[in-house]
Structures are given as C-alpha cells and as structure tokens.
Amino acid sequence: MSGKGLLTVSALIGVCAIWGIAYVIVPDRLWSNTSISAAIFFSFAFGYIFFSPVVLPKGKIGKDAPIIGAIGPTSVLVTSLVGWAGLTFVLSFLGHDKITWVMIILGVSGFIISTLVLRVAAGIIDKTASQTAGPSSRTMWKSEIDALLCSTDDAVVISALSNLSEKIQFSASALPKSSDIINLDIDSAITNLRQSLESERSSSNLQHVLSNINHISLLLDRRESILMSLRNKS
Image (cartoon, rainbow, N blue to C red; front, side, top):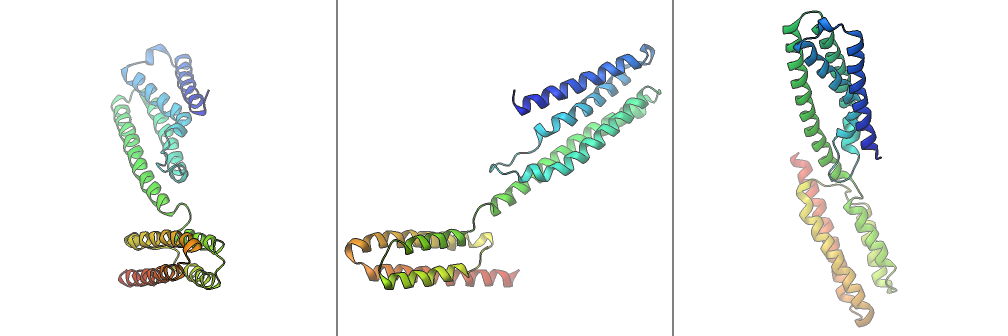
C-alpha cells in the first residue's frame, strides 16, 4: 500500500477510535443531535491530523517548495482545529447547544477558508519557485560557450570565444521578467554560433563565426543596458 493509502487508513482508524471512546465514556442520556454533530466534527478534526500530509498542496513544476511552505501553516491549522473541536465536543455534553452549533459553524467555515488561503499561498510559492529553480541563463550560456571552445582549434576563434565566456561570466546573473526577450535573442545567437562553427570546420567560414561572436557580445551589452534601466526605474 502506498504512503497516501496508509495515511488515509490511519485517519479512518483515528475517527473510529474517537467514536469508540465517546460511545464508551458518554452516557446514553447525554447524546443528542447537537452532541452527535459535535462528535462528528471532533472526529473529523482528529482524523485530519493523519490525513493532512495527503492534502498538502503540490507544486505544479514538481518542486517541494509549496509543501515545505505549507508545513508550518498546516500544523497551526491542525492544532487549532483539534483544540476547537475538542472544546466544542465538551460543551455539547454540558447542555450549551447554541454555543456548540456556533462553534461548529465557525470551526468548519474557518477550516475551509484557511485551506483555500493555504492553496492560494502555495500557488504563489510554486510560481516563485518556478522562476528561480534551475540554473540561470548566464550559467547555461557560459557552459555552451565553454563547450564550443573545445570544438575549434583556430587561435583567433578560441581567443574570441574566451573573451565572450569571460564577458558572460561577469554579466548580470538575474534579470527581471521584462527582459526575457533579450535572453531569447542571446539563446538564438548562440545556436547560430554553434551552427557556424560546425560550418567553419568544413568551409573555413571564419568571418561568419567572428561576426556571430560579436553579435552575441553586442546583445550582452544591450542586456546590461536594459537591466540598468530597469533598476533605475525601480
């Protein structure tokens, strides 16, 4: 049985345990519609202790950030819910029917609202994680250029690629979302450079290779200007 299945079984066992204990220790004369509703509420809250890991929000990009971010709020929610439900359960047997119903309504509505807010917060965490997860564009560009250094033996090209690699290394490692277009242009330019290097091996197209390298260098300069402009505006 999977971990999710075991947790579900544990939750069901917890619910049955609450009902069994209540049936044994509570006299028959104290049972009423109000106390039965309170018992259902309390057993649900107790069972949720075991079931909460199953319903923790999952990241859409396969990351653990939403789950990690939800552990603290979920713990507070479960603890508060069990304490509130336990108090409601006790009050139901003391004859405070109206107070019991008010606490059940507040407890259930508070649980639903808290769960929905938690799901929204998890979505924000997941979106933020998706923007920062993985290597930066700069890291990938440098890796590609370093790999291209090994694909040629021309001294002029090697020197130009080395300078380009160093320029990428000391360029900005993170950019606002609005600069994604220039990043895509650099990606495309590096692809063209790779293709021109492959062509250079057979046709000695040295000028075309150097032209592509210079184009990437100009795009990097433009990228830095965009970043500086955006930082000044912020």
